[in-house]
Image 1 (cartoon, rainbow, N blue to C red):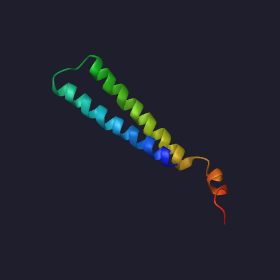
Image 2: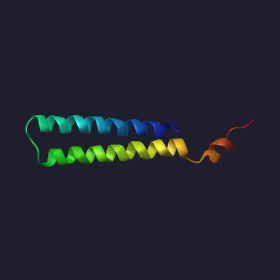
Image 3: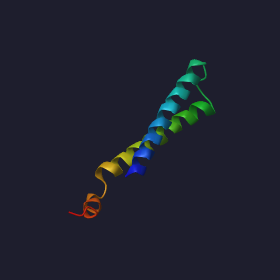
Image 4: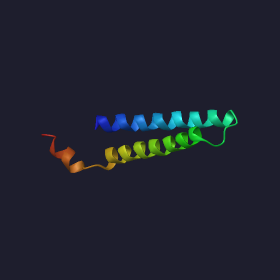
Length: 71
């Protein structure tokens, strides 16, 4: 469960860095090229990573988690 949160944050950081990089390229007047393409790919990968691990953490196998608790 902790590893899911770590990967969620990694995905979120990738998104933020990619958005900043995309904005930096565009501010310099670069509208095409590898930098723009990589920053957009970074945004997409970061969003997929963050949402995937978020949904795994929130809606994962709850029965397995409940069985490990001894009352």
